[in-house]
Image 1 (cartoon, rainbow, N blue to C red):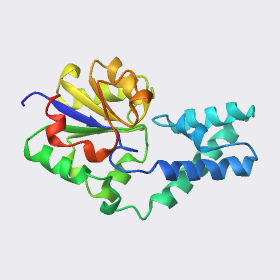
Image 2: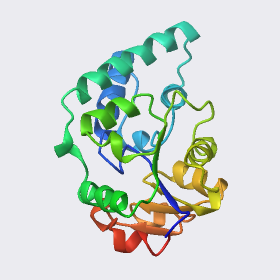
Image 3: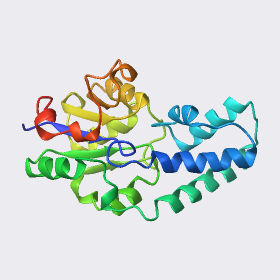
Length: 216
């Protein structure tokens, strides 16, 4: 299967740090005495830290200065880093280690395309950095998903045409970004949440090599 590549989102696909993002944002919201629940948190999937804060503040009808926002963003990141400090290989989602190992043996180019500015730190903690030929994170892109920048940059770094790339995502913003990049998009989650996806799987354990090779 030469000339094909797979681009993985990080949170919710390789590991589940979404709960740590939730806890960090919940702490910020509680401090500001504004509402924040898991339903609102769903809107933050695949979204940059800055945009996430904007969504939370807009939902509460709260207006803050840029200086106040900057302090909150720094505080949120500190909280998140504290939560992920003990992350390790055992925190890989089901089936991911076997999948990455098999794809590597098959010489399938792989990349990570994530909005997270802590993506490399998380990958290092999970001990899977060396599986990937390219890593595009929140430091590398200026336009968050659903803009296709993150995936188009990953394709360029892999030297693979966008039409030959398959993206694995767990957020609708990521699926939209993949389709706008001209790529195949596989979603992890309920089919009704991802009408634009080319295929869906109920969980990462269904992301097997035999399943993915039908798209490669």
